[in-house]
Length: 202
Image 1: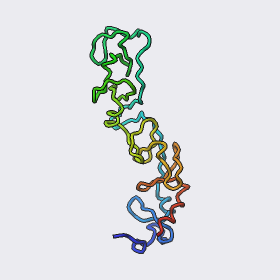
Image 2: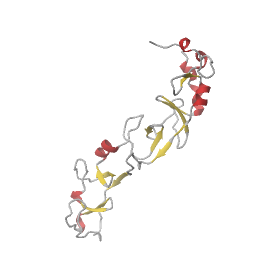
Image 3: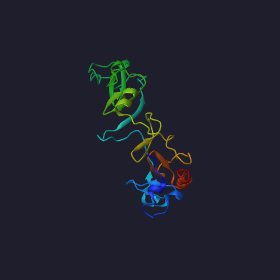
Image 4: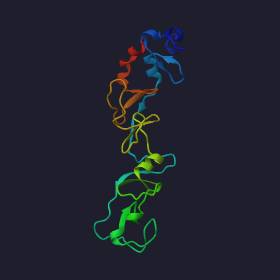
């Protein structure tokens, strides 16, 4: 059953008619006028992070690295062997990645075992192809639902691409450390608070 302003009465704090001012929903489900909503809300801050996020298990995520075999004979090639198979390395076979030496054909995704020949991601010292890394550890943008590589903007419990975190009222992007208000799926600059109040009245 649709609600109407006459059933709600006024603002829970100041009793002002919500029919005239528009309304916001407080953290406990109460209906508030814009001024009281702002007074009772704690503004969130946009927090920028690099994709070296710490997860709950406190492990660092490494950004994608290009794989580049050495062009000159490596002084590191030694009988110590490949980090994967343990067999001796010849200088033309050495790939340096994750602080270790590998045969070019032994540097594989830890999940699907595909030989990694381009960019890769690392987690807990293990290499992953981009697809498998995203499936296991990737961070999804709340707005576009695509994986985020690089800089992450975080607001409340939501994460965004820097280009996806936009004010729902003026359309401008949020900057690093900039204050914002959030209610449901809507985020906005504090200065844009009153631009949509009249749209709630209908």
